[in-house]
Length: 410
Image (tube, rainbow, N blue to C red; front, side, top):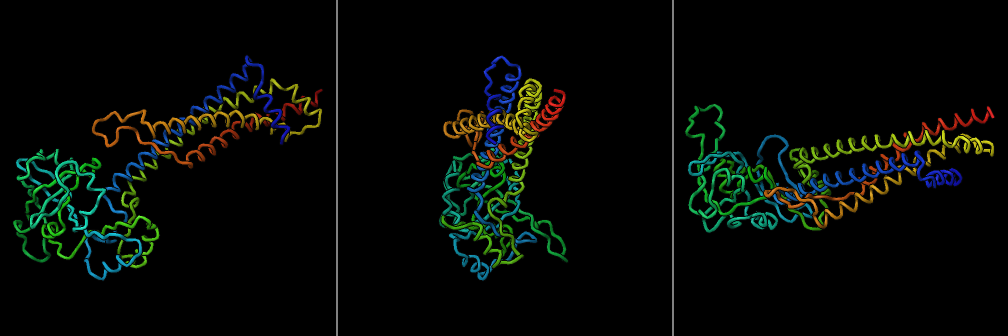
């Protein structure tokens, strides 16, 4: 193996700087470097966006959410709560009930999701940091308060300084079966004062209003029914283990969702986009690697005398193929190494210093989020190895055939 590498290295570091083949080889190396660098940077941006989504939704959503497998609500019992609380690693269990409501505020109208939460929700420090106006409170003495998303505030034209104008909430109940329908009895109406406004993510801000659980249960007429149990875990708890134990205790009646599974569709979309970007950039690198094919083909013609001499010295087809395969690998892997290093450096600079901004005043971050993953480097390197082999194999095969014929004619 040392001999093919030695010959390939001599060809790669040829002193004929004006040799056209050398120029093409350097162009090939540059194309692979630029493609590899761009691929690492773009994949890191997708990683950053995925991590940003987890952070934003992690502030609002629980680490584990328990929902009923069929239907919308389930009966809450002490037995059920005891089963949940008996699982090691659980720090807090929050009961919640949510459904769509119709809102009126002065002359404005809006449709949103009203989410009622039990009293321990007020201990959510992550969510408290998202309250940008007003206070983080749901109840004071016997008065109920709401925490409203900023998107809803803008849509309704709510003034954060106005603490005396309540929201009018309208909820349409299900009609009882077999009874005469009285439309006036199907719509339940209640009012509540806003205490604060939160800003997390556009979709959440435009959708949710947080209220005390008792207020929501009365409006929805849910009584002992809930739509979910939201769990916060201890810092050292293993989410997968807790999730597995809950599934074992509660059975198929309930869905036990971790943070990723609660937004599986959104995260899957980001990953699919990342996959397509990877495929597109790999195709671009493959196009850039066509130059390797041409440079190796011309190198075989240019070095036909050298190859004939190697054959006369006892070299076989396998050695000649390895020389050209090694030459192609040196061109591609040199470019890939430069590209991966440059991509890592640029991503690191963006991650630590934020040289490229989002360019939007309303964005949750000033700079583009990026995050490097070792798997991106591994997959990029592996794809380049495959592309290099495919680009180099045919010229290596042609070189051996031509050299063998040349030796026979000599």
